[in-house]
Amino acid sequence: MIASTGSSGLYKAPLSKGLLLLLSAVSIILALVFQQQQVFFVYNWKAIKEDFHLWRLISGRIVCLDLKDTFCTSLLIYNFRTLERRFGSRKFTSFLLGAWILSILFDFLLIEALQWTFHITLSTLPSGFLSPVFALFVPFYCSIPRVQLAHILGLFPITNKTLVYIVGLQLLTSSPYMLVVALSGLISGFCYNWDVLNICKILFIPSWLADLFSHTLEPLFSSEEPVNEARVGMGATVDIQRQQRIELLDQQIMFSQIAQLGRRPQQQGGTAIWNNFFQPWRNRRPGNQAEPQAPPPPSEDQVAQLMEMGFSRSDVLTALRASNNDINSATNFLLQR
Image 1: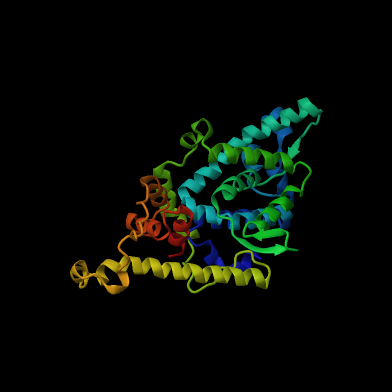
Image 2: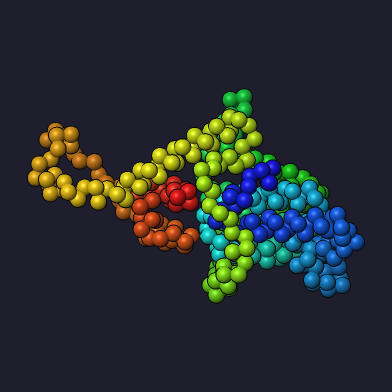
């Protein structure tokens, strides 16, 4: 399923592509070739607490030892690439790093709470890059627009997010103790997404480090811009794919409107003076009918938020005007241009 989408689906998402390829490759190699070395990647809390194997806080929280978890994690990372496009690679990396560090603390607190409350002792937890992936469900729920695609029996709606949540539920039920890791990740994602205790400024990738990685690693994992490719996503049925192609056609119509909006001042240059003196008949209205009001100018906060993703100020202003200052629509316009 992942391979069929092609590398163009990871356009403007180099970190997602790097995580998808590297973590999956290491997990498969360990499972098939170096099975004896898997012991070094076990997330063993008992060894961390009693034997001070602090290195397990790193090795045990990167690579999945269960191939089912590897598949689900890879599929979720692929679908969360939309967040990297929306936030920018630097902010997306900072979110993953912050959630990964915070989840260590919450793993410890949850384990101690279970032992103190229910007398349940946990020696090991599921290994892998799991907590940050679960943390991504928080901005995915809050930031990605929900598009209804179909209904089941006319009662249960299917949206563009439904299958992502189903994969997350499958990952959650893959291990008895996965609930601890998932809850730790969700709490970490909540804390970072809402900047609890100013955590975003503490756990943030500095600009010099972001520039270093953008010049060294980003070219290795960058993907070419897709050309004339219908974005099918996770649509598993013909009806869902047809609906997504209709949405793609609607977006192309909106893009042409944006282009016309940018060319309008040049096209009207020769007739502007004439129209100032003689209003065309088609624009005349009854004397008491008010002219339609233009939408208010976009706020600087909206402009700054979109410019942080790497777009120029002129493109951001054009997209916001065309979308009536709706930041979600403007973001989709800019990402698809």
